Amino acid sequence: MASSLVPLSAPHPSWFTPKRLLVIFCVINMLNYVDRGTIASNGVNGSLGTCTSSGTCTSGSGIQGEFNLNNFEDGVLSSAFMVGLLVASPIFASLSKSVNPFRLIGVGLSVWTLATAGCGFSFNFWSITICRMVVGVGEASFISLAAPFIDDNAPIAQKTAWLAIFYMCIPTGYALGYVYGGLVGTYLNWRFAFWVEAILMLPFAVLGFVMKPLNLKGFAPAESKQALISEETDVQEVQDALNDSAKPTKEKFSHMFSKMKCTCIDLNQFSRFIKDMKALLVDKVYVVNVLGYCAYNFVLGAYSYWGPKAGYKIYNMSDADLIFGGITIVCGILGTLAGGYVLDLMKSTIPNAFKLLSVTTFFGAIFCFTAFCFQNMYAFLAFFSVGELLVFAIQVTSFPMQN
Image (tube, rainbow, N blue to C red; front, side, top):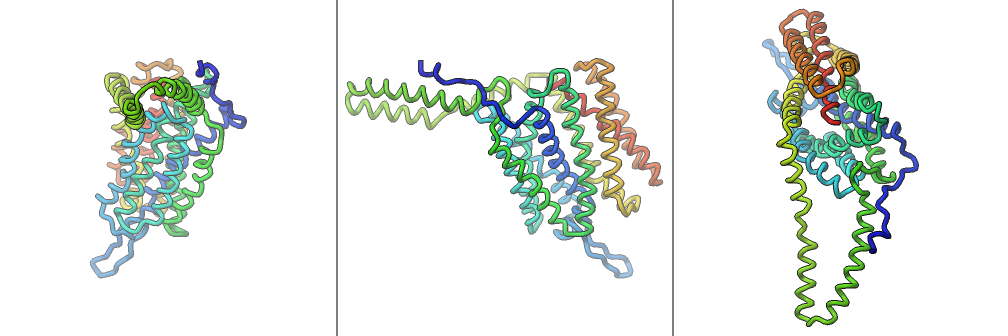
């Protein structure tokens, strides 16, 4: 009876429109990948000091030079954020059923901001590695919840286009990160790159707390849930008080202890999380898509992180960050748009998405591998560009699988 007095409709934000939401999420997504490109750039990542046979030595530069990291430690540093990302993503996704998702994004971006600033204050390998792990935790809330928000708010006829714009920020962010990291590392200290990133992300973290929250479809707003629970609790307490007045004192204390125990130990959230995980693991399309995406990110991560360093050391590119940044931004945008256009021509279905994914991945891998077989820099750049174009075209194939 009391529950009928409490509305369950979500609050209507006064400032947000779907297009503004898309712009905000695109900027946040781009900053996430700017950070990944930055730490991979020669200007920030740097290199170890070297000594020639004649005894002439040069000091190292960037993170690798300052902390004296070998290639294995450098590789660990590049993928440390994935630890936090993998652990925290399902947790944030599960919490979105009981906590407003927009607030969760605000929490995650706050963690990201603090951790990124911490990277600039790191003093050895382990300190920066731990900070990178925490960066992944902060990124998890946004990565796991942003796409559903866009899918909920985009016009029905433009959902694929909106998601394509959102994911196009990945290569753009990587490319800008290469250029940004190279410039900061050249003219300032590598630590400034992380501090500036944290400053740029801070307004978006604050925005997640001060703006009226948005809600995912199918979930009642957290405020309404709290109000409903409060009303029902008040009525229940009155009824319990009337009933308890006739009970002996010992029985009343036993009843109160039982209620407190039930309140403190709530396993509903955990059981719901386990149930969700089981449902996902038996979905064959989802499992295959995840496994393929893991392999895709394995290859993309290797090329994106070690590519600028290879260009600098193997092909003696003095401006490797700018070259790789230019190639990535052009091929990334063109590849994503071309993949979406081809998929529309084929009709955007899951079987067609798998066909496009298989073809572009196969030939993209061939071109990228062949590129490193050439000793000529221009042949390398030509084949690598075609490979990147094909590799980024497969991003659009995930859209039919998400809808």
